[in-house]
Each structure stands twice: as structure tokens, then as C-alpha cells.
Image (tube, rainbow, N blue to C red; front, side, top):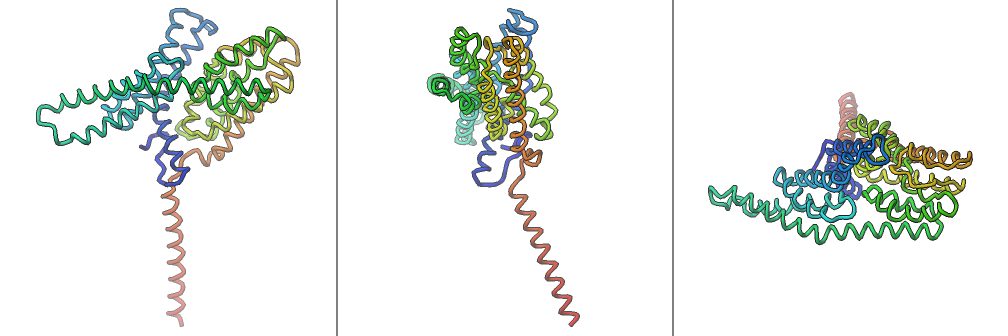
Length: 385
């Protein structure tokens, strides 16, 4: 389905299929960016380490990211497939996977919301024109309720555990890279895991405890910066601001402020989900930053939470070498991510998806025009002779 964010490509190649998948993922996430920003502002302001710590208002944070945002994504995905009925069923099915989940089920919502709506669409197609007059509402309501409830149970028992297992695998992969002293390569796992909203699991479940052990021995640890570095995300957002789709550019500055100054990295994840190739920019920036952190022997004294520039300033240990290493790596990661992201967007040329069919028609029209001109010239020469 075409969206206002990513027009549906008309080709049949691998690239077109990837664009379709990315477009559908963007179509589920981008309409809900306002909700992400609202959650980001509440998080940056009211959590214990925020600007205006407030215990009561801070309690909004977990329900919004664990329940509200996945439900919105599942609702939107279902609506894309089968209108309002699909939206309702998608939200009901999504409720099944968010209950009891250890991590925010954004990816699970992108799967089960459209899937539940598609099953309802198939059912509606089967019973169309077969329901007796007067029973339409009864059949519609019970079919939506039964399918939605069944998918909620299936999601809770199948998709939810699968996503939790995937989260554990990502954490185990990062632990292996850390144990084998190939820290720059951790970005190859950390950045994709972050975009799938597994950042808290990776940071607080794997890197944080390991970093605490190192900091207790040496007073600082580079592990605190592997996931929390705001540089790669800032570079991606800047690339979108300068070279991204024009309809999205006005939303980027607010996202960049919330990301860099508020430390809410989740705000840039939807921009990568919209164009999955942009994950390469985040990976390149992350590897650059980690390489500089390791080369300069720097680190932080504790986990910067949230991962904002202000948290970095508060957790950077004394010493000119530490400050140079930390902020050189941070700025370099942003610069590399921006450069790679700009190149992936073709410096604006590849930001707006082009329809292959339209290009082929244009080439064919130009070819016919050239042939007509040649035929006309030949006819004139024959008449003159």
C-alpha cells in the first residue's frame, strides 16, 4: 500500500521489494511520530535523571513505551491492511504480545497488527454476500472479536516469546564481541538492535553490568559509551534534515533536539525503519566512535542515562585526555554517520522514491521521439529527390 511517506514502487526486483517492506514499516510508525515525541518529552523531563524529576509524572514513561506506542503501531498497521475493522483487530492482537513482555514490542506489533487484519480481510471475503439481511452487524462484530482474541492469545504465546528470545540473542552477541576485544565491531550488532528497540536490553542488561565491573577497577569504562553514544543518531537525523524527503524535513529538528539534548534515542529509530539502508550510516558512525574511544583509552564513570550530551558531560572523568577522547569520538561518529547517510540518500537525489515504470515510459517516449524525427528527415529527403 502506498503511503504519504514512501510511494509504492512499481518494479519487481529485489530493491523494489525492500522498498515496499520499508514503506509499510514506515507507514506504521511515521504517522505516530507525534506520540513518540510526546513520550520523549515526558521521559526527558520527569524521569529521576531528567530536567524536572517528578515521581508521579515519571510513571507515565513505562506504560507509554510498553503499551501505548506498540498499540498505536499495531492499530495503524491493521488499518493499512483492512481499514477500521483491521485497525481494531490489529490493536487487540497487539495487546496480546505487549502483556508480560520484557522489552517494548514495536517489531512484534509491526508483525501481528497487519497479520490479524489480513486474516480478518480473508474472512470478510469468504462471507461477503452470504450473510442474511439483518445479521451483518452480528457477523462483523463476532468475527472481529474472535479473530482479534485468537491472535492476541497466539501473539502472547508465540510471537512475544520469539521476540524476547531474539532480544536475548542480541545481548549474547554483544557479550561475545566484548569478551573477544573487538569492540568496534559491536556496532554491527548494537545499532541494528537499537533500531529494533532493544537498546535498553543491550545497554542495561549487558553493557551496563560489565561496565560497572571495569569502572570499579579503573575508574572508567568504554562500555558505557557503546550503546549510549548520541553521535550516530545525530548524524542520521542531520542527513535527513539536509537530504531526506522534503515532507519529513520539518519534523527532524525537533527529533534531533530530543535525541541529542534529551537523550531519547528512540526518536530516530523510525527514520531508519523508513529507509532500512540508513542503518549502514549508524553502524559506520558507531564503529568510528568506538574506535576512537578505544584508541584514546577513554571512558565514562557510569552509564549516561538517558544518553544525552548533558549526561555525557556529567559522567566524563577529569583529565584533558578523557575529554578529548570522549568528545572527539562523539563528534567523529556524528560526522561519519552524516556523511554516509547523505551518500545513501544520494545527497537528496535518492530521498524521494522513483517509480521504475515511469522511468521506463520516459525512456521509451524519448526513443519514439528520436525515431519519428529520423523518419521525418528521411521522408523529406525522399520528397526532395
